[in-house]
Structure formats: structure tokens, C-alpha cells
Image (cartoon, rainbow, N blue to C red; front, side, top):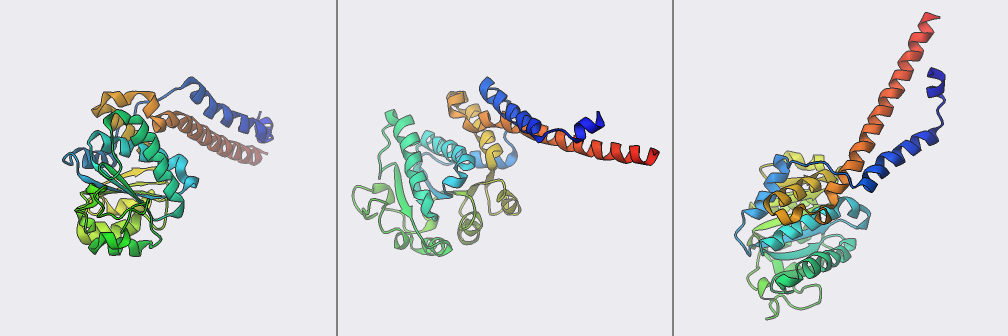
Length: 288
């Protein structure tokens, strides 16, 4: 038996991983999620704002990390739509611009079609700015210097964009939500927005970047969504408050947690098995 396991063809391991991921997907199996304090605080930051507050979204990621960050973006935008917050969208990454338009189309224009959200009145796409952290610094004192127009080149003082008329500085925003995959992103928003101006900041980040966010919570960061797990917890919080969003159609992250769980359990099992084989061989060798 020991020799069989030791010489097991790796293709059987690949097959086991395929089944561990595929079976929960096919069966649509999900597990209940309970928001941690980090995620609940992020949820409460949006929920407790007065309706029609100003929320700035910075999409600081590109399609390469969309699988991990898109469920967070969708859940956060849905929540802001429910509260009728004024949503300002921007990005410090060139690849983030089409993701903004995609989320506006999929969430605001389609899911909330009956609510009649209007561009310039309820949401605004400011587009891409190449300034990195300098853009954040300048926005702190002169918002319209960095974004004199929206993504369609319409001046922010134009009558068709009433939601932007009173935005002069970064602290005119009631909350900043940074969806971050790296630099520029989470750390720059902490250093040049949350710390100097005391603006509430919620971070939604990839798993590899999340450990960098924890030291800033709860002083500079109001809440943190870490990886697909954080997205699933936020979806659970949204469904708890608004029963409509318990529908699996709105819970991309929760659906992904079951395959991830079984894949992780399989990996842990294989590690334990490998160590068991190693120690069994050592014991067998000493007996000789």
C-alpha cells in the first residue's frame, strides 16, 4: 500500500482536484456565510450613511484580477444603489476604465433600470487618471484640477452634471471605496486620503494584498473586504438586510466558496498524506 501511494500517478491527483471543484459547481452547493467584523464594518459604513451621500469608487485593478474583485465591486455598487448614494467612479489603472463601464452597464443600467438612475445626477464616470498617488494628493485640495471633466469630456461644472457641482476637495466625499489589486491602490489611499483628511475609507482587495491592509484597521480603514471570502461575507450581509439579495443570482462569491472549500480540503489532505508516507518510510527504514 505504501509503495502504491508513493508511486501514485499525478494524474489521479489532477482528477481528484477536478472533481473537488466541479461537483459543488454542478450541484450548486453553497454554505452559509457570516460576516466578520471587518466586513460588517464595511457594510455599516455604506448602510449608515444618509441617503444620497457622496461615495467615490476607485477601480484600481485590471481584468487579470477581475475574477477575485468583480463580486466585491458588484455587491458594493448594489448596496449604494439601494441607498441612492451619489456614486463617483474613477481609476488609477488604465485597465480599470472598461471595468467601470461594465459595472455601470450591468448593475446600474440593467438591474436598477426601473429606478431610473441618471448619469450626471446619480452616478458619474470620471475615467482614468495617470497621476498615481499625485492624483490623490492634488484631489485633496483641488478635486477638479485632476478631474476637470468626466470620461465623456463634459466639464464637471456643466449643468448636465449637477452631482459634481459641489465637489471641490476630496473631503467633500462622505466615503471612499477602493477596489485594489496593487500599486497605486490601497496604501496610497490610506496615506494621502484617509490619514491626512480623516475620510472614511473602505478597502476591497485581493488576497495577497489584504495583509497589508490589516494594520490600518480600524483607525485609517473603516472596513476591509479580503478576496473572494470577503465578497461572500458582504453578499451575506446584503442578503440579511435586504432579503431580495438572498437570490443566488446575486451571490457570485457565495457560489464560489464551496468549490474553494473542497479544493482546500483536498490540498490539506494531500499534504497530510504526503507527510504520512514520509514518516511511514522513515519508521520502516529504522526497523530494518
